[in-house]
Structure formats: structure tokens, C-alpha cells
Length: 187
Image 1 (cartoon, rainbow, N blue to C red):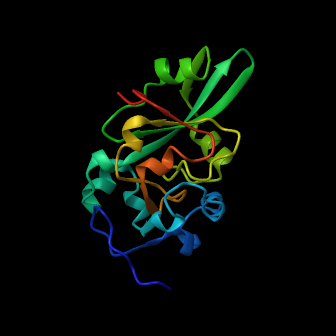
Image 2 (image 1 turned 120 degrees about the vertical axis):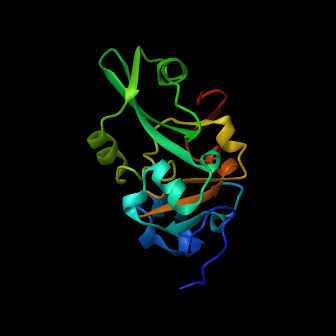
């Protein structure tokens, strides 16, 4: 196993290129890292092994000395128009709230948009609740990324598991499959 690397923020026992530690990420995430096509090299996506009981954003930030303005949340949204439901993922900084009712709903052309039920989000992503990440989502999903996320040099996101987190260049999230960068997605 490679020696642990340093991280751009936080206090972790170690960090490794996520592509070299597939046991620390969900299977869809590992598969996506194998097909990585962003400008930043795949080795720039780091994984940190952490306590799953501290996976929720506020607890994690406190336990690992991570500022909320470099922590991003990936939220699964169910957008409905008539009988059709579209699942999408939205990524915003932890210092903001996702504007589901206006920005997301309008962008997806839906009559109604809401947070997807936990069991649906987990089943559809193949990831654990509290660890859902934009890397490795189903290929046909829209991925809406707040412009503030892509402008952040490095952001902390889920690893697909509650056990760990990824540290990734913010700009790379705007280059993921299906990604669209949107100003004002988080308020």
C-alpha cells in the first residue's frame, strides 16, 4: 500500500489516491474512477478513511477540522412532470442550501421537485446514505453542480460509503459525466 499523502485541509490519519484504494469507496465510485476523464489526473482524487458515525457534514467538519466552505453535499432530487419522474443529483457547498423549489425544478422542467426518498436514493445510486457522491452516479442522471463548488480549489465530498470521504479538485466536479455548472444552485 502507498504511503499516506498530505491533504489540502483537515486533520486525517492519512489520504491516498482513491483509485488505488477501491476498498474505501463504493463500487460505482471505483468504476467511475477507472474511467476518469476530467482534466485533473485521477490521482488528484484523494480518499480519507474516517469514522462512519461522523459522516454527517457538521459532525465530520468538527471531528476532522474541515471548514464547511470546502465541504460539498450531493443531494438526490426527484423531479416530476406528469407521470414521469427524473432523478438528478445536485452538488452544493455545505454553507448553502439547495434551491430545489425554484432553480432545480425550473432547470429540470418539472412541475414538482423534492428530495428523493432515502431508500430510493440508496437503491438507485448503489451508495450508502450519508456517503452519496457525484462520482459514479447513473449515467443518464442530470448532475447539477453549483458554480461555487467548481470555483473551490479542493472540496470534500462523499465516497459512496459512510466510512470515508473524497477530496477532489472542485473544477473536476463540473467535468463529470452529465454535469452542468449552475450559478445560484445553492443559496
